[in-house]
Length: 223
Ligand code: DC
Image (cartoon, rainbow, N blue to C red):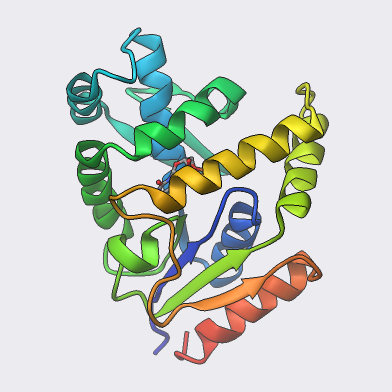
């Protein structure tokens, strides 16, 4: 009988986690969970409510009151209290704010609980920064995706342009460097390769090659 594995995909911004995680989940027939979208949703809601970043306890309270749902189908959409915020959480303002918001321990505690519930008994591909290290330390497959800053900025640039958003390549590079620094130096659950994780540098690999490697690793567990 095939097993329902947990697959953790971590790595810095723009390393290709979303594309890879979605495709792997499609091939294996697993659920896909984008945990970054949850931190973005909290950042989005705090802007909506006019709560300043300095008011950490208000942001934690707001996180506790939010009902976050994912609806799978054509891509994965995220709803906050019934409102589709899939687009709203991708603006540069929310993107920038999501990093300091994700450094608030109270926010992390609440979202990690939800993420573990979403992962259920397995049959999940979950992407983020701390999935293999904190959220699902028992995941059978742990992937750490990387790519150079230049490559990641170029990918985001193309992505934004194709969805009709204004983009400035140099600005994107600086933003990525700043987010990398914040995400990997924060005290609570910094971005790190989990013990037992497999690092894949995606700079010179096609999407198919990376997906193939992850599926291969999963198959070693008999999925
Ligand atoms: O993957 P993303 O760019 O959508 O993530 C948005 C922010 O949330 C990013 O700055 C890192 C943070 N994040 C995190 O701290 N832990 C996760 N599991 C996922 C994202």
